[in-house]
Image 1 (cartoon, helix red, strand yellow):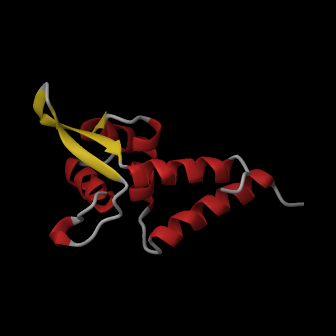
Image 2: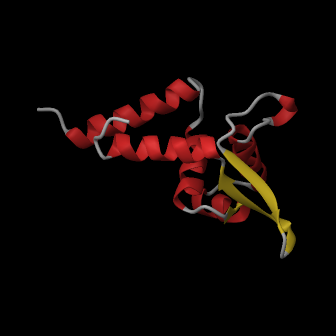
Length: 113
């Protein structure tokens, strides 16, 4: 007997593979952190996922419009300086990221989108 929850989890992973067949799990987790807590700081993402500052920056860059070395990113998140604390970066979803988060939610709820 197939478990609907596991099937939906599999569908979620397939959706990520459509976006990037080589996406690292850390990158997917970073996206989910931002989707769950818009306005999360880079430090909070690193603390939540146990990532170093450089790993966190690399994963956020992969999800941003332009990845490191000026390669195209996924344009799902944007990191901006916190106006109250310039050393701190705040990460939010882009419109494409919001759409992806809605699609993932629909998949996990078992709805087609």
